[in-house]
Image (cartoon, rainbow, N blue to C red; front, side):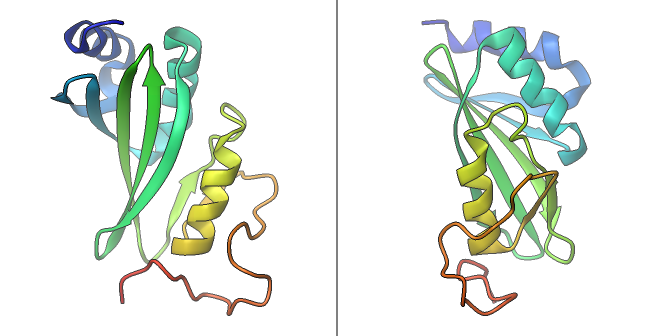
Length: 142
C-alpha cells in the first residue's frame, strides 16, 4: 500500500492544474476540488495512470448548489474529488464512458437530487417509481 504523501505527490504532478486544494484528510484518504468541466479528463487519467477504481459517487445539497463527490480507490487509498454544480442548472458530465459502474450512481443522483449527467446514454429512473411526480426530488433541501 502506497503512503498518502507519495500518492499525493504523484497525483499533484500528474493532474497539475486540474485539481485544487489537494490535501490529505486522514490516513489513506486524500481529497481535492475539481472543476466539473475537467471531470472526464481527470477520470481518464486516474484510470489509465493510477489504475483507479470508482467506488461510489455521492451528492450533497449545499443550499444554492450541489456538491457531487467522486470516491476513487487507488491502491488502498481513497481519493475524494468534489465538484460543484448550481441548483438552478444542475449539470455534470457523465463519466460512464470511462467507468461503466458510474451508471447506477449517476442515475441514483438524478432521481434523488435532479442533477443531470450530460452524456449519460440511458438517463432513466433508477430508484423512484415511473409514476413519481416530475421535478420532485426527495433529497433536495427546500
